[in-house]
Image (cartoon, rainbow, N blue to C red; front, side):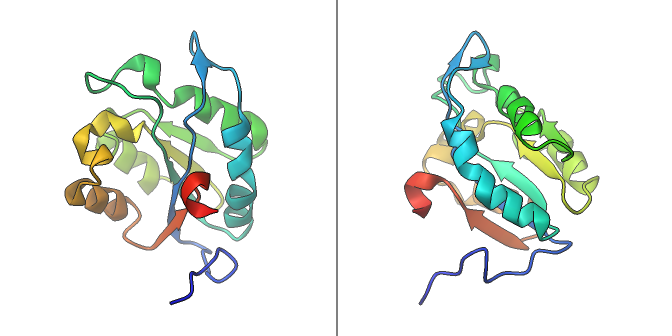
Length: 156
Protein backbone atom coordinates (compact mmCIF):
# COMPACT_ATOMS: atom_id res chain seq x y z
CA UNK A 1 0.00 0.00 0.00
CA UNK A 2 1.49 3.34 -1.07
CA UNK A 3 1.77 6.09 1.50
CA UNK A 4 -0.34 9.14 0.91
CA UNK A 5 1.29 12.55 1.08
CA UNK A 6 -0.21 15.91 1.89
CA UNK A 7 -0.48 16.41 -1.88
CA UNK A 8 -2.97 13.51 -1.99
CA UNK A 9 -5.44 14.76 0.62
CA UNK A 10 -8.08 17.47 0.80
CA UNK A 11 -8.02 19.34 4.09
CA UNK A 12 -10.23 22.37 3.39
CA UNK A 13 -12.42 22.86 6.46
CA UNK A 14 -11.04 19.73 8.16
CA UNK A 15 -9.27 19.35 11.46
CA UNK A 16 -5.80 17.93 10.90
CA UNK A 17 -3.76 16.37 13.70
CA UNK A 18 -0.09 16.88 12.82
CA UNK A 19 2.61 15.05 14.75
CA UNK A 20 5.64 17.34 14.70
CA UNK A 21 9.12 17.10 16.16
CA UNK A 22 9.34 20.22 18.29
CA UNK A 23 11.80 18.67 20.75
CA UNK A 24 13.93 21.82 20.70
CA UNK A 25 16.70 22.79 23.10
CA UNK A 26 15.68 25.32 25.75
CA UNK A 27 17.71 27.41 28.15
CA UNK A 28 15.90 29.43 30.80
CA UNK A 29 12.63 28.98 28.88
CA UNK A 30 14.10 30.30 25.62
CA UNK A 31 14.60 28.24 22.46
CA UNK A 32 18.31 28.08 21.62
CA UNK A 33 17.92 26.38 18.23
CA UNK A 34 14.67 26.41 16.22
CA UNK A 35 15.76 24.11 13.37
CA UNK A 36 13.13 21.50 14.23
CA UNK A 37 10.40 24.11 14.12
CA UNK A 38 11.55 25.53 10.79
CA UNK A 39 11.83 21.99 9.39
CA UNK A 40 8.08 21.53 9.94
CA UNK A 41 7.11 24.82 8.27
CA UNK A 42 6.72 23.49 4.69
CA UNK A 43 4.14 20.93 5.84
CA UNK A 44 2.40 23.41 8.12
CA UNK A 45 2.26 26.12 5.44
CA UNK A 46 0.92 23.70 2.82
CA UNK A 47 -1.86 22.46 5.11
CA UNK A 48 -2.73 26.02 6.13
CA UNK A 49 -2.84 27.25 2.53
CA UNK A 50 -5.16 24.35 1.72
CA UNK A 51 -7.58 25.55 4.43
CA UNK A 52 -6.90 22.99 7.14
CA UNK A 53 -7.47 23.56 10.84
CA UNK A 54 -4.19 22.35 12.31
CA UNK A 55 -3.84 20.71 15.70
CA UNK A 56 -0.12 20.23 16.29
CA UNK A 57 1.31 17.84 18.84
CA UNK A 58 4.84 17.02 19.94
CA UNK A 59 6.88 15.93 22.89
CA UNK A 60 9.61 18.03 24.48
CA UNK A 61 12.33 16.63 26.69
CA UNK A 62 11.82 13.95 29.28
CA UNK A 63 9.77 15.21 32.21
CA UNK A 64 10.11 12.71 35.03
CA UNK A 65 7.27 13.74 37.31
CA UNK A 66 4.37 14.39 34.96
CA UNK A 67 3.71 17.95 33.86
CA UNK A 68 6.62 20.30 34.51
CA UNK A 69 6.62 23.95 33.43
CA UNK A 70 10.22 23.66 32.21
CA UNK A 71 9.02 21.24 29.51
CA UNK A 72 6.01 23.22 28.30
CA UNK A 73 5.60 23.81 24.57
CA UNK A 74 4.52 27.43 25.21
CA UNK A 75 7.84 28.82 23.84
CA UNK A 76 7.33 26.77 20.67
CA UNK A 77 3.87 28.28 20.17
CA UNK A 78 5.35 31.77 20.53
CA UNK A 79 8.07 30.97 17.99
CA UNK A 80 5.54 29.51 15.55
CA UNK A 81 3.51 32.70 15.78
CA UNK A 82 6.65 34.69 14.91
CA UNK A 83 7.48 32.42 11.96
CA UNK A 84 3.90 32.47 10.64
CA UNK A 85 2.88 36.15 10.73
CA UNK A 86 -0.80 36.63 10.10
CA UNK A 87 -1.65 33.08 11.24
CA UNK A 88 -3.54 32.62 14.48
CA UNK A 89 -1.53 30.27 16.70
CA UNK A 90 -3.21 29.24 19.94
CA UNK A 91 -1.38 27.37 22.67
CA UNK A 92 -3.68 24.97 24.50
CA UNK A 93 -2.22 25.08 28.01
CA UNK A 94 -3.59 21.79 29.31
CA UNK A 95 -1.52 19.40 31.42
CA UNK A 96 -3.68 16.47 30.27
CA UNK A 97 -2.91 17.51 26.66
CA UNK A 98 -6.46 16.75 25.49
CA UNK A 99 -8.54 18.19 28.32
CA UNK A 100 -11.03 21.03 28.46
CA UNK A 101 -8.61 23.80 27.38
CA UNK A 102 -7.50 21.81 24.35
CA UNK A 103 -11.06 20.86 23.40
CA UNK A 104 -12.23 24.47 23.69
CA UNK A 105 -9.30 25.76 21.60
CA UNK A 106 -9.95 23.20 18.85
CA UNK A 107 -13.70 23.87 18.88
CA UNK A 108 -13.05 27.61 18.38
CA UNK A 109 -10.73 27.15 15.39
CA UNK A 110 -11.36 28.47 11.91
CA UNK A 111 -9.83 27.32 8.64
CA UNK A 112 -6.16 28.28 8.38
CA UNK A 113 -5.55 28.43 12.13
CA UNK A 114 -3.30 26.45 14.47
CA UNK A 115 -3.71 25.00 17.95
CA UNK A 116 -0.54 23.65 19.53
CA UNK A 117 -1.24 21.09 22.23
CA UNK A 118 0.81 20.83 25.42
CA UNK A 119 3.76 18.41 25.62
CA UNK A 120 2.51 14.89 24.93
CA UNK A 121 5.12 13.55 27.38
CA UNK A 122 3.01 15.05 30.15
CA UNK A 123 0.92 11.89 29.72
CA UNK A 124 3.88 9.73 30.78
CA UNK A 125 3.80 6.08 29.77
CA UNK A 126 0.60 6.62 27.78
CA UNK A 127 2.70 8.64 25.33
CA UNK A 128 6.02 6.80 25.44
CA UNK A 129 4.38 3.37 25.13
CA UNK A 130 1.88 4.50 22.45
CA UNK A 131 -1.14 3.96 24.68
CA UNK A 132 -4.25 3.23 22.66
CA UNK A 133 -6.49 5.29 24.94
CA UNK A 134 -4.33 8.41 24.59
CA UNK A 135 -4.11 7.91 20.82
CA UNK A 136 -7.90 7.74 20.66
CA UNK A 137 -8.21 10.95 22.70
CA UNK A 138 -5.88 12.72 20.26
CA UNK A 139 -7.84 11.40 17.27
CA UNK A 140 -11.11 12.45 18.90
CA UNK A 141 -9.85 16.05 19.12
CA UNK A 142 -9.92 16.21 15.32
CA UNK A 143 -12.98 13.98 14.99
CA UNK A 144 -10.72 11.38 13.38
CA UNK A 145 -10.63 13.49 10.22
CA UNK A 146 -6.95 13.61 9.16
CA UNK A 147 -3.59 12.64 10.67
CA UNK A 148 -0.25 13.77 9.26
CA UNK A 149 3.07 12.43 10.52
CA UNK A 150 5.68 15.15 10.13
CA UNK A 151 8.09 14.21 12.90
CA UNK A 152 11.10 14.20 10.61
CA UNK A 153 12.74 11.16 12.15
CA UNK A 154 9.64 9.13 11.25
CA UNK A 155 8.38 10.87 8.15
CA UNK A 156 11.42 11.17 5.93
